[in-house]
Length: 165
Image (cartoon, rainbow, N blue to C red):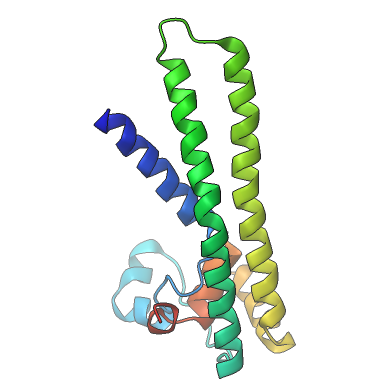
């Protein structure tokens, strides 16, 4: 039972990392470059971005908090469906109709998490000034840039110490 629970915990953790906004969770490019972390990955440090105003920082933190609050129940739903899928898989006679039903439930549960992430990214981009959005777009085009826009927003505009408030 413990092995299965660990697997569920891993799945939920992975989904939260993938689906929650990244602002505030990453060290800024300068901090990472100083530590040698970027050199090891082949990534370039993000260019110097126009800093967020205090009002923008408060808005970003509110967006992050809202997304985390919404993602918690959605991730719990994914974990619950995952447990039911595993239980069916490990049954003496797995139920094919139940498998199909649970597959649809999993699709819907994961989609709900992705919708939360998408909305949080749209909200975060809306907080940025036109100049900050241009800087973000330029960083996205660089080799080795993260594919996750929320991670890039975090790296460029939300240093770790701000995101942990």
